[in-house]
Image 1 (cartoon, rainbow, N blue to C red):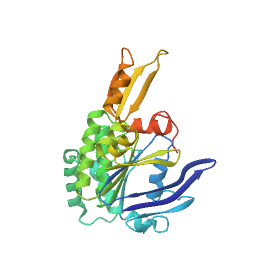
Image 2: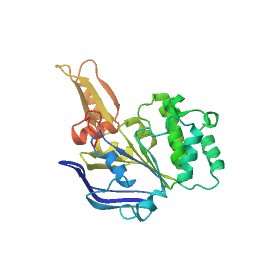
Image 3: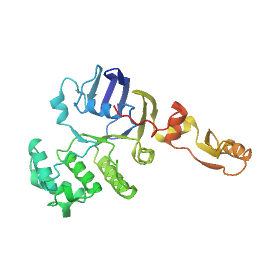
Image 4: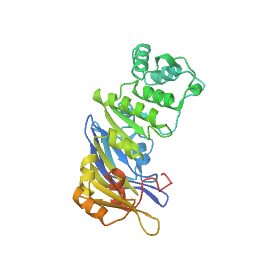
Length: 283
């Protein structure tokens, strides 16, 4: 459904993407995981025609993204990081204007349908600025889905939401997949990637350093982690390939030892030596 081949993009002397290549299958939820500055948002901007790469090619549903941006816009929906709803208009007015711009047929009926799916019917005539952050994110999703796109891009979809609202949003994203849509989401929330994604690509400094299902990636680096405090008071994590190896390491330590299952951040640390939330600057 999506094919990226050797995409590079620089901003001045900073290389945001460095010969990035990967494919996304039709109907899967694919996650781009990495710290701020890894190149996640730049990738989404290229695929959604907001910026052009310096070199490389990319296709969505066999349509050339770079050379046919207007055709691409007909088959994609985008939920950006920033909330770009018209805050002084109602939920219904936001959807109505968006639907008219995209020439959605039978618009009023489709608005009612999407509001029901997003559980926003009761908020139909509420002014956006009066809604909670979670309800505004739902409205952004509803707007993106209104033209019935084949591919949905979610750039940090649950950023700034509390854990309860975040999980409600995850349920909605899972429903979207059951409709046969392809979803690409960027996130730095480890739990989000593990809960939603069929496959994950891990980015670091514009390069793809790992690709696979969450289970495959964790198995490759080790399925268990032993954590303990060293003599200097630092938290040490050792990744192990078996439970027996983890218990053996734990027996060699004194108090304060914990054994847990590995997660995608452990994969990232193993591959790069950095933690996902340590890098602050996004390109």
